[in-house]
Image (cartoon, rainbow, N blue to C red; front, side, top):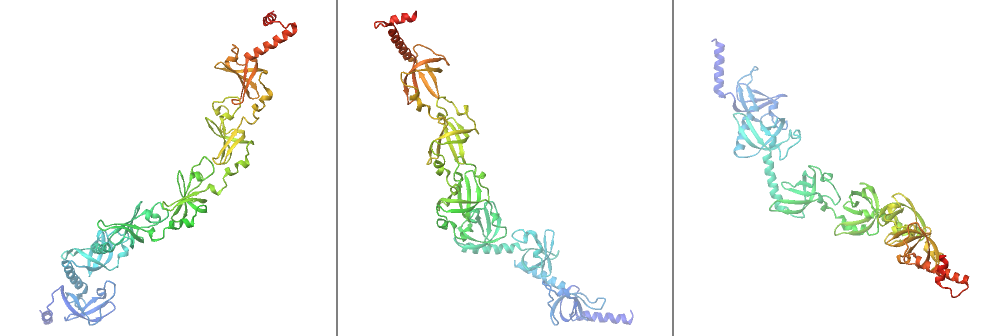
Length: 550
């Protein structure tokens, strides 16, 4: 060993005795100078230490140090290549941080940290200089779609697991939020009361309503309590995470169930219905629902009226409402009735137009001849459509004066154009009676001028039924020869006979004839003529018969 080497060794040994620091040991120093990139710290060693300026930045990125400050550093080496002591502020912070973490864990305390980046399964958080793992399930009370917005934000955490030897720290933010939520819930439950207006966040939306987080307590806002108007689904008026004001409708302190209302925050529009929509008024509204029995019309938000299918048109046969109106149509109607207690308004669309039946007598006076189209056939007659909404009935008995018709289909079918005479108009009951046989007039009105009792007429047998002969007298007139008046004859259909009229039956509209009477009267007339020719007043019937036989 030469002199210089021996001298340096002695100096180093003397320096160690004056500064008995071990490598990686914590030491206290004084900031003597700050440059653009570094901080110079004196720990009382033979030389000063140089530390990177970034190690003195806080969580916000600001440099929190000035000349003269006392700082904790770690002694890493007595000399580097430039002859300076090697010191570390970051390691000193880490040693101190672990000590603080251990203390916080032992006291079940809270520590502040800042998320620095995302990793698989969670986030990395800087807690006082130590990198800790924040599992995804411990970030919040509910899943967060974007974790990026949390990076750089100061937050409080609880320590779940701490292992200094392995450098492993697991933390939780959820535990703090749950505790805060429970405290908030307890406070809310103690102050919550029916009728109270509170603010909450829409947590979930279902088909029947929405669940609103009031701050530790979830309340149900039913779809019927969202708006006075009609909605098909809660999503039409609410969104997830939307903040809304609601009123507490019902609260059960034992079960913690809360029923909420939103429409109750504004006046009930039905309170003004009697004044705004009096009976008889013409109103305008929008079709919001169409059913088999009618259409619902929104007159204003929360107020709807029903137009029953029978009130849509004057026609007797009601069409399906969907054939008349569509969703979204704007229509005019007349208020027919309302019941505020049951929240019902009856509307009529047909009342906008005049009732065609009110003009029917004027348009189609009794006895006038009209034309119509066969709309329907029944067992008892046919219905003719005279115009839109006006149908007339021709009863089967008014088809013909003479011919008996078993069913209207024997003569008519749907779509046939038929001429008829107006017999009667019943405006109140909306009935229109028509006749076809009346078109040529009533032949029975002239019967007395054509037929008289004891007169003789030539007839043709139409048919024989139960021993009675039915006669065709022409012009729609019918005659009969009762069985007892046939004088023993059994006539055949189409046979021509000469008979005597014995009675005109106005009630049954029949002319009753007799073959027997005809024979008697003709015999008497012949006898009278015979006597006249013989000139003998004493001539007898036997003489007449003998002469006739000869």
